[in-house]
Image 1 (cartoon, rainbow, N blue to C red):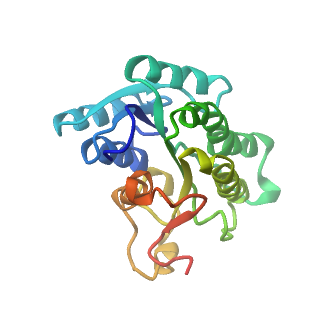
Image 2: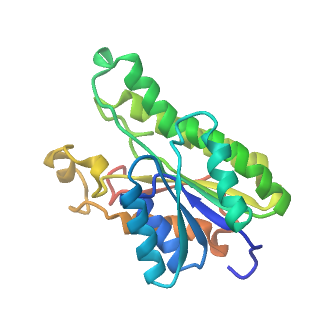
Amino acid sequence: MSSRPEGCALVTGASRGIGAAIATTLAVDDGWTVGVNFRSDEAGAQRVVEGIEEAGGRAAPVAGDVAQRGSDEKVLAELEERFGPVLVLVNNAGMRADGLTVQLDDDAWDQVLATNLSAAFRLTRRAVRTMVRARFGRIVNVASVVGPKANAGQANYAASKAGLIGFTRTVAVEVARRGVTVNAVAPGLIETDLTEGLGPELLDAVPARRAGTPEDVAACVRFLISDHASYVTGTTLTVDGGLSA
């Protein structure tokens, strides 16, 4: 990462699971100062920060419900004031509210879209201005194999993740000439709180015959943020053990 300018990273929804693993690998393995964003789990975010610091990295908890309008400015401004420009953004915060389409109410639709898609849009819109000025930036959006692959009972989740993939590709084209890359990862069945209750039949459909780990996803995000991926933009890296093959 020797060619990168001075700055920091923000990982949303990083108090546990995939977000925590991403924050840890960026801070400990790659030396980024990382903002560990959380909505309500302050204790979890603090544990992630303490683990990073014990391993020799640098991090700080950053409170903010990214689904709420205005939170993008608050969260990014707080990090900028403490650590300098945010040059890495990982839009990981996500939620599910499953149900067949005929049963989904407006709140279940709106909340999932606000958290999984609109939050990424607002944070990207705000952060990319700084990245363009610095002529360096890395944005990684955590999508899902459910975006391009149907999964009954998750119309809202699928719409949000498919939208995130389309958003990723479009922004990538807009900022590519300024040294900013925008990519996505699409996890399949990963062992997190978000996937609890999906049932053993989904595991049977995974050719690798195992669920992935948050660290599996974090390794792919790390690659997309690294100099090794400086010519990779507008793509979606699937991390699913062959589920969508």
